[in-house]
Length: 248
Ligand code: 2AL
Image (cartoon, rainbow, N blue to C red):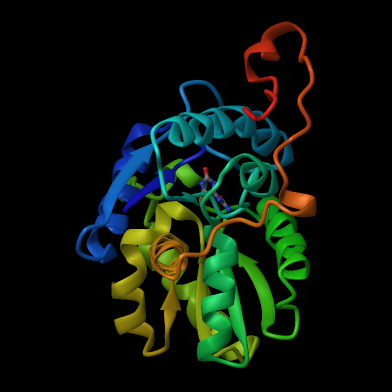
């Protein structure tokens, strides 16, 4: 089984981090292919970044389809392009926010999301509603660390995130923490040990969710909303991405 994990930002070190996390949980016989777009933002920290990252992300899904990929993970906590990716993929596509929030809801009646910058809180809040987990999500919190600062030792990221998680457990009455960025994946086990509650990382959760769906023989429904995009010409710079008619 081939699972393609797409980091929708263009930072190669983050793709590597995500690839290592994915490989650490993938089952026997699962091949993890990690990728990032060639063009786009180095990190995704707002609606504009998300919109700009989506074209490159979808190009990676198109390549995956040509290579026989069985399922995809979108490794950014805003789950950018998730619905569009499902339109063009045969296999399942799972976003890390979706996987993490749904996983957390199995483990606690209340969880808090701890994400990067305050301006990304609204993106996660929208996803809480989209995924129907409002009754489980007590609060979305930011620790005001930029995505690319997460792996800068001088940013003191671990201590800041740990503090925010502790505050969440006390002030929000939460019993689990959802990590709100793919770049936090390597902190998950340490945070879980230090906090004594389940800490859920979307990258590993999404990889195992895709693996389960593929093993169950389930794929994206092509009836209705996730049907292949309607064939039509696209103009200008995006003309090569125009949806083609299905071979009959
Ligand atoms: C993210 C993420 O997971 N990757 C990225 O570039 N931005 N999300 C976030 N909330 O900062």
